[in-house]
Length: 502
Ligand code: SF4
Image (cartoon, rainbow, N blue to C red; front, side, top):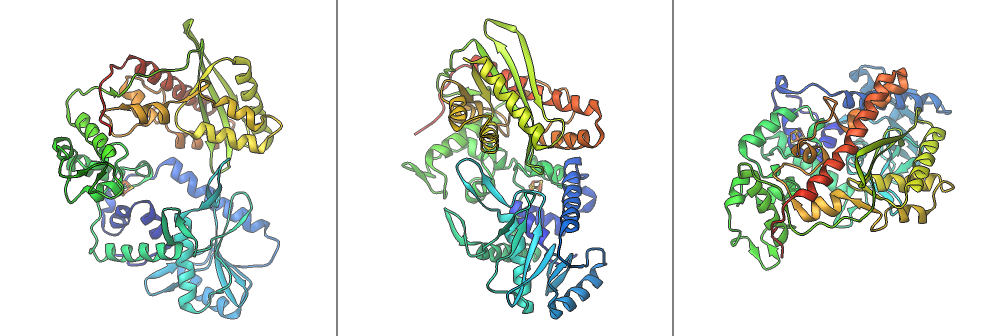
C-alpha cells in the first residue's frame, strides 16, 4: 500500500473520508471509469497552469517535466540555493509529500502557491466577498507544514492561490474556518491529517454517505451498492454524513428511523443529536416512512398558492464555473389561457467571450421585460445568483433595482427553496429537479443529462463548432425548463396531507 499523504489525499478527505479509505484499501478493479467532465477538469487545470507559467514575465526554475525522484533532488537543491521561483517542485518529510505548483522566495524563506483554474474564493455574490475554500486551504497547509519541517518556511508570508481571474489570493491559515467553526485553517488541517493517519492505520472506521460528490467519484457504483444494501440513513434527502454519524449509535437504517416513535430522542424542541432539532428529526422520519412504504405518494403540508399570471416562464441558466461564464439563458414560456402552445426561447453565448456573454445577458433581460407581467419559476438560488453576478459586471444592462424587481414576491418563485423544501415530502433519495421530474414521469431526451455534462459539451462546441453539440446543449436546457413545468403541474395536483412540525 502507498503510505504517502499528499495534497490530493487531504482534498479528498475534505470531500469524503470514505474516499480516502477506499483509495488506500479499495479494490481498484471496482472503480468506475473517470467521467468526461472530470477528465475535462484535469485537462483544463493542466492547460491553465501551463498558460499561466508561459505568460510569467520573471525567470523561474522549471521542474515540472522531471521524474519524481529527480524533482525532489532538484527542489531541495534549489531551496538551499535560495532560487526565486520554483515551478513544479516536489518535497517530502516522513510520509507527507508536497507537489505545489509554485515555491516562491519571500522574506527570509519560502511560501507555496497553487495555480487553480477556478475562483480562489467561494461564495462571491452580491452579498458576500468570498471565503477561503477548505479544500484549497488543506493543500496549502500541507505544503506550509513540510516547508516548516524542512526549515525553509517564510514565517511572515502566507501561501497563496493564483486563480482563473489572474488574481493572487493569500490564504491566511490562522483565519477561522467558518462563523460557526472557530478552528483556524491550520487546526483544521491538523485534524484532517490526524484522521487520515488513523484511516490509514484502520483505527478510524469510515462509511459511504450519499452526497453531491458521489456522482463524480470513481467509487460511486460500489458505494451506492453498499448504501442500498445497508439501507443507510443518508438515503434520506438532506440527511448527510454529519447527521448520520450523530444518529448512528442509536439509529442505523432508514427502516430503524421509520419505525421509531422518536420519544427517546426528542426533548422539547431539541433532540439528543447535536445540530438536529425536533422538527427536523420528525421530517426525517416522515421521509424515512415514505422511502420504506411501497407506492408511497408525495405529501404537501399546506395548500400551495402560486402567483396568478397568464404568462408562466420557466428559467434555467447554464454556466461554466471554470471560465466563470454564463453561456445560456433558457426560458420556457406558457400562457395559462393557451397551455398547449408553449415556446422555448434561448440566449446563447457562442463563444465564452465577455462580449458574447454580455449580449446574451442583454437579450435575456430584454426578453423578460417584454413579457411583463409574468411569473418566473426557477429551481434553487443559482439563477438568482447568476443574474446578480451579471448585473455587477454589466450594470449598464440592468440595475440592482431591476434584479430585485425580477425576483420580488409575486414575480418569481424558487420552486426548490420556497416550495419543495419547505412544504413537501417525496419518496425519493434527493430533491433535485432531475429526481422529482423523473418521479413524475418526465424523461430527458439526452441519455446523460447533467449540468456537468452540459459544461463539457460547451467546451467541445467552442473547440469544434459542431452544431450537433450546440443543439444537444439547447435540448438539455429546454428539458430542464420543461421539467420545472412538469413539477409545477405535479405540485398543483398533489393531495394535501399533514407533515409533522413543531
Ligand atoms: S462515492 Fe460518495 S461515499 Fe463513496 S467514496 Fe465517493 S464520495 Fe465517498
